[in-house]
Length: 94
Image (cartoon, rainbow, N blue to C red; front, top):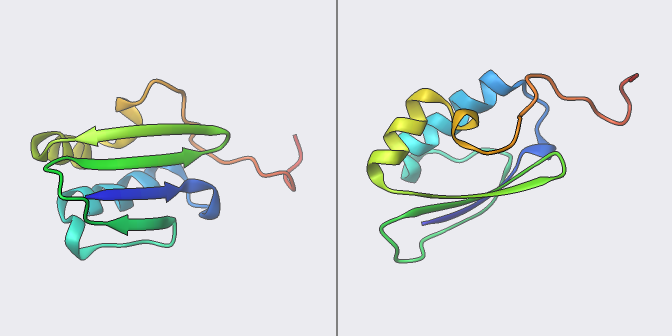
């Protein structure tokens, strides 16, 4: 399965985002959210996620075991960039 996610369209804090994506990772056929731009079956045993967050793009290719692990632990622990806990939008004072 292939999923394209754009975190920039949702203003939830990181813990909520991680719970939301965690629910999807544990049950991908029964869960879809506003930040999902594309969901399609691609015939692969892996779940491929293209995740856009801030200015960064991340690709995750997950086995069933990895999906379950990340679904429980939170995806931000498994990527190579720092994900801020809170969002700063262009309208927020810096």
